[in-house]
Image 1 (cartoon, rainbow, N blue to C red):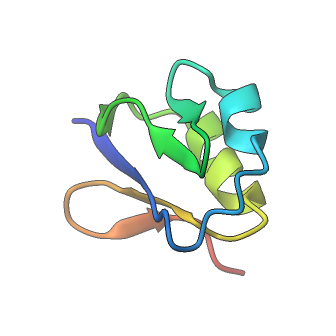
Image 2 (image 1 turned 90 degrees about the horizontal axis):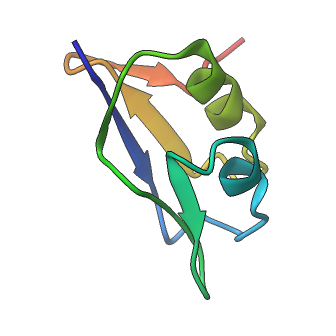
Length: 72
């Protein structure tokens, strides 16, 4: 199973937090961050990054439902 990672360019503030924490998954371009690959191996760190995104622009899904960012 893989997770799908997406960055909403309309919400992204280009803080670079995600690219700094997981440069193999995220990159920062001139305007916003982007996922380098849509499918990633399940990794708790990716959920932590989605949780920490200041704009809540990152979503992670398991193919059935959105699993990140996690809600309280």
